[in-house]
Each structure stands twice: as C-alpha cells, then as structure tokens.
Length: 535
Image (cartoon, rainbow, N blue to C red):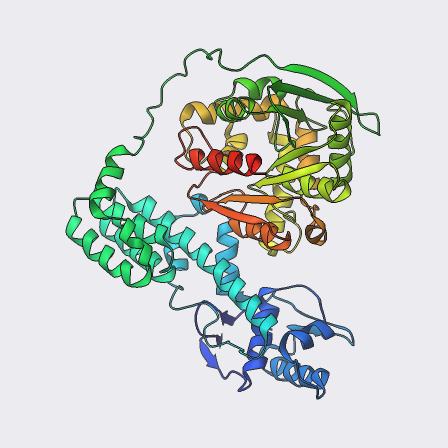
C-alpha cells in the first residue's frame, strides 16, 4: 500500500489517499471497528470484537467478517495488507498508515518540550472537533466506555500541546499564546483549570476585560467557575511564587536527621543497600530511576520530599541493584529481580505491614509486590508511574527511540560532558533551576555505570503489570502530573483505571519529579498525608 493513506480520528472520521477523500462504509459499526483497530494496534480475538460491537443473537461473527471485507476494500492495496486476520485473531498493521491521533501520541511520548514550535502548531491544526465524532453506538456499552476513555486521553494530549505552545509563546507572541489557550478551553470546556489558565494569562498581560468576559463564558459550562472571581484571580497572581533566581545553593541545612544505612542480600546474592530515617509508623519507598542513598539525601531534587516524609513516618528507602550503594556488578535486571530486592529490604528491616510509595518505575514494582503480598501492603501510592514499559503497546517510533537510547547509554553515560545525561534531566525536571539540573546530572553520573544504565533501561522497556492491576486489594492513590514529559498522564490513568477503587488525582505540573518550588508540590504532599492518615 502506498504511504498516502491518511486516517483522521481527531474529529469526524475521514480517509484520504493521495489527497483524495475515500468513501467510508455506510455501516457505523464498521467505521467503529476501524477506529478501534487503529487506536488499539495489537492482536484481538474475534470473540472480543464481536462482544464489543455486535451484542446480537444472530451471527455476530458473520457481521464481523462482513465488516472486515469492507475495510479490506478501502484500506488494503495489492502490495501491502492493512487488515491482518486469521480464524481466531484480527489486527491492523499501521506501518503504512498516517494517523493524526497516532502522530499526537508520538509527539507527547517524545517530549513536547523537545519538539519545535512549528511542528507543534502543525499538530494543533488537526484539532478541528471532538475526537471520534460520529461514532456513537448507543446500544454497545463496552464500545462506548472505550470511546469515552479514548476521547478523554486524546483531549488531555491536545491540552498538553496547546499549553506547551502557549508557554513557549507567552513572551514572544502574546496573541498566539491567547489563541492556543482559547482553543484549549474549547477542547476541554468542562475543566475549570483550562479556563483558569486563560483568565490568569489575560490578567497577567493587562487584559482584565477579556478575562472577565471569559469568566462569564466559562460559567455557562462550569457552575463552579463562580468561585474563580476576577479579584481572587488578581490576588492569586500577586501571591504566586515568583520564578526562582538561579543562585548557588547555600550549605545544606541540618534539618534532616541522620539516616542509618544497612545492607541485605537479594536471593541471587546481590547486595542491596537500604536506609531508615524518621519517627512514626513505617513508609516504604520503592526504588526508582536512579537512587543513591547518600547523594539523594543532600540533593535539592529530593531533599524536601524526604524532609516532609520523615517528619511523619519512618521512611525506608533503598538503592536498587546496579545503582547507588547497592551492587553494580550484576547482569540480572528484570521485574522479578526488582521485586525480590524490595522483598529482601522489607524482610531485613523487620517490617510486617506497611504502606508502599512507588514513584516512576517504582510503581510497577509496587503493584507486583502488592499483588504477591496483599497481607503486607496496607496502602499503595503510585506517582508518575506506568503499568507497561516503553516497548509494550507503543508506536514503533517510541520503540526505536528507546532502543537507540539504550545503545547510546553504553557510550555516553559516564562521560564528563553532561549533555547526554542532561537530555534525561530535561524530561524529569523541565522547570528545574540550573542548580537542580546540575544536581540531577551529577546524581545520574554517580549513581550507576553506563553498562548498568543501559541494562536497566532495556529491562524497563519490557515491564508489563497490566494483567495484575485488577488483583490489587490495597487502597490505592494514583497521582500524575498532567504535563509529565517523561511518562504521559495516560499511563497514570491506565494504572488507576485498572486497580479496583483506586483514586486518581492529576496535578498541574510539567515535571516528572516534584520540585520544592513547584506549585503542585504542596497539594501532592497534602493528598499523600491525608490518604495515609485516613483510617
């Protein structure tokens, strides 16, 4: 098939080949089937597709065969087949397709802050109307649940793009920034934060009349906008934390108690370093990318987190295998070995029952531990995490990028030139100060070797605990930053949606880790403490 087949899903479905609009099937269920296969590019059992779209007593498999034949006639060409099916399974090969929703997801996963403004504006031009418009199937509740979830995910991605554009243009092109913020409110009109962002921007640029006008418009969509009085906006703007000046950090304050560092042994003989500090009931933090028990303790990226938690709990942390004070000389990096490391630490620390805090990669490890040991985990907090690694269910461009990154790590990680490591830093803390950037760069250099970094990156690509989410019984709080440049918020929502009864909270931040001056940090801390103290 020629590379000229375009599929539009960010609005009413449209197919174009070499610029010519193709006729769509008259059957809405056939169009819905195409949308589902496009957005879920994996193998599906025929029975599952029948349940999703044909809940009728008369030959649903025949209806599926008929729809697939129609789609083959539209999508397939002699030299390349798009619809791939056998007697039991169906999938869609996206290799030769150009899909607006896939391009949007790819941009988010690449990191919006790394994409030129022109490319972002080209993506934003595709936001013409509601995603998947015209594909409502009122008699198919499972498909409708899937469609609503897809719309919510896509709206979030669109909002991230428009907000990134507005932030980039805030100083250089105010009118374009306002344009993108207005478009954000149109896409996500029932979200108070979108209206609040536009109103604040208008006020900060001496346009109070427009701000008041938009507040009145917002009220038609959102009754709670009454709480966002313009005078309160102005007061809030005055009270906002001012941008931090990049100044040398003073000598560390003696506000953290000394920590006790110990060692234990994982089942395969790897030595694992762990530490306990603070007073009160235990709280176990799962290891993440990357940890160093001593260097973290003085780092401006982590210090405020540990101070807040050790004020309330006895915080137990550890360095995962291959980094920090734990053994670096190991070839075994997998989800099972990471869970085994955690098991060794809590056993050595003499902990019976405890809440578990997972951050980033630590979320998948925490989920697996909680399922294996439901009697030990009293509560589960997952921040900035994911259930599946970068190889699992990702566009090919993301997989290729991950493979290339793994290869580069083996050569660039330990060099004195920090440019390579700073690429990671810019994804973890894009709003960090120069001091925080330098500290995180140095943390990565000190924490592991090029070999271990590459092997850990490789192992994380294969993590998949989606099938375990439904088995979590501990009360769970999932928190994710909306603009997270390292792990898209859709991955956090996937975690929360899969865990029974999980509470999901999104925070207004572009960082993967919450810095002390991040406006979202106080709310994160309030939510975590309230959740842990709620009996």
